[in-house]
Length: 157
Image 1: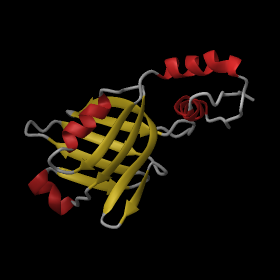
Image 2: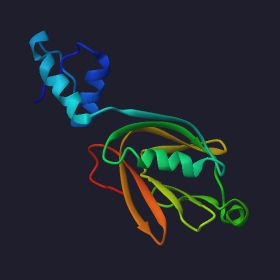
Image 3: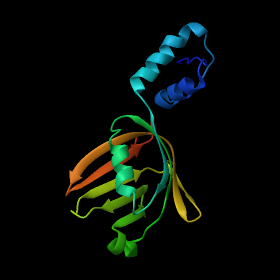
């Protein structure tokens, strides 16, 4: 079993997230191994805030810029129905995951897919909360799709 030193709590949490391993105390001489894991992961970008019709495109585009890297997301998502689509061009759908879609004036747009386990419903909103790997695909008919993959899970978006 891999051992990760508890020298720096942030590195230990990162190592566990990347490797999906259980943390064990290890001698201080193992520090270079944890640093190598962190170096492979690259910088971790944190996304927080509220996603709505006004900023969904910018929010999803920013996550797309982190394609292939580990990101943390803690965001509240305002729900929108098909009735809202005509006016706002913003939609949220729950179907084997959460899908947030937004179209721009040129009929291009963004779509973000969050798998089950990466979000929850809280009162009137959805909350995306977790550590993910950002995955960009598309465009398909002018729409770019961003998937938030949960590290260690088989199912990608």
